[in-house]
Image (cartoon, rainbow, N blue to C red; front, side, top):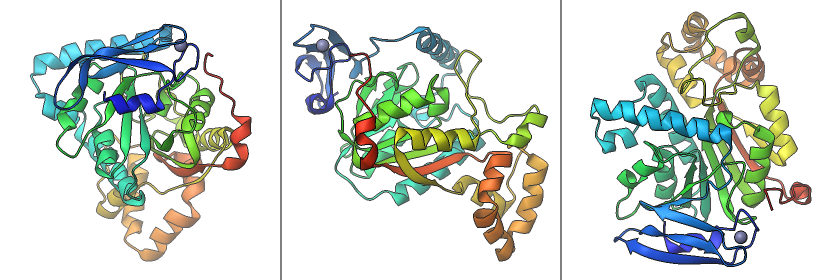
Length: 339
Ligand SMILES: [Zn+2]
């Protein structure tokens, strides 16, 4: 991390922003070893390999998930994949990686170039955080694990790309209120044990009218009740996987105080155009049939505009949401994180 991050941090225990930054070791990019200490309550957050550790309230769910990522790192070490390749997620299934990249690249096109602080929730190997930095933001990557995740962030750094990395739980965000111009999550929020709490924490740390962008979260369709394949699962059972229906997402986002819209996923659009569905995709045969119709402009219009929401309810396409923090609801969201 760099010292400027202090501008947006607060103590998780007492809530003060009166923090003391101690540098033990640094290189030409950032502080690699040191600590941040709260002047009021004395709690110390360590910095190791450039990553600030704010997991002071980690519960059993977070600890279980951290163990899964630790084990998964151990198994990957045997495969001898370079850190650069791991940082680009080349150890993941290529179609999944391709789909998520398509949807993220489309999101980058939607974003205006910005100078403000941005929060990348569940940033993993930080490939998205690097993309946000490339658009001019000052992003902060948070994740609950460094193993094969935040530690790989350094692979993305170059003379123009830098971001801070913080070990943190989205349900206990160590940030001051109203600091982020953008909050972003890609395939991360469905790992939260409490979507309402996560969204209220994100809301609190965002500036009024700040943007919330969500991509690649799995959405469960009603029709999936009748089939066993419920789509891609990222890890073993002890990482929480919650595949909500679109109604649950819509209600939760509205309750948290966000106003926005749901977009037709670009990865599905591209696969419809090329007929490139594979067995991994949900409703594989139906998707293949739909792709045959998709070449007709009228069918494309009906599918993307008229049938989009009913399709979401029934089949559950990946969630692509673009919204903003509505100022009207600001007073409703109190600072409720462990103070
Ligand atoms: Zn404190």
